Length: 388
Picture 1 (cartoon, helix red, strand yellow):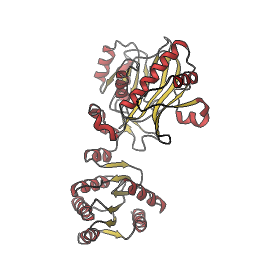
Picture 2 (cartoon, one colour):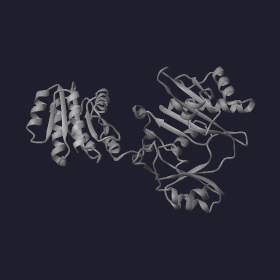
Picture 3 (cartoon, rainbow, N blue to C red):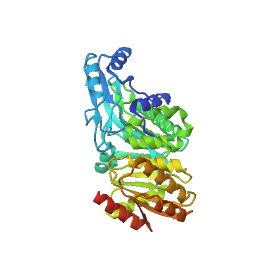
Picture 4 (cartoon, rainbow, N blue to C red):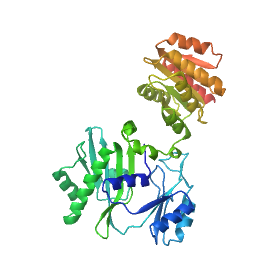
């Protein structure tokens, strides 16, 4: 689950990581109240969306006077941002962060994530902050240091020395940098984060290290341990289908293709998307209905797939182990009749009670094609989508 910058900064504060004073506004009146409460004479305003590249998109503005703040807030609240990260649909900013400006001496990059090759959390750091780390890794990888740390969220003394050398920190600044890095590692572990990125971490002219920007993503599978973070979820930052799927407790990810997918099992769903592309098609989504889904849950998943206006054909691929094929059939038939489906539906069923599932489809009087294997099903779906 992605958090907004202001939400991430509130969490950073809890771990002792310095951030500039800020407030959040969702209206012009609230922006005026924030400016007054912080006694601002000038301010930085940033749109709050779950995507990077806000500055390039015009979503970060500087108010030179307090009088400029309401006008800039009015322009930014409701702004739609479209870039590679958001996809063509874009995301709309419902809130703006209003922050006290910082006098910057130098910018650094710091982040923590899980290195799945080493099966350990790592700290990634660079003395070249404020730019895209992917570009820096491509052009100047020698400027980036990667430091593994423990699952207790602690960095050892020799690791902190290595970090200070990479960043050019000496004396008192090295001590502040060590405290900053230790707090970042602890925050990453204790929040069950999948990513914690500070870009830039800045050295102020007063000699302090401050998290000027922050990106925090929490592992969805660990959210049950953090009920206090449930309010951080923002359904406006995902597609309507993904928001509906979360409500129904279904694993759904929107994609850009036109073949809707309904599959049982994450591995089979990945294989289904691969074979659709192999035969020249493009999946519209990833959907895993789960091993023990009810007829109602299957029907809801099917409704979500069909609510995507790009979908021109639907491929249902079920290998019934725990899941009963007849349950899948009942759910699909129920949703198809309810929504008066116009797009072609191709079904491949195997496993538990498969014959009953096929019988239900055949007796449904719906335009549902059955396939004997996945390759045939994928080809039929691709052909149907191309025919429109």
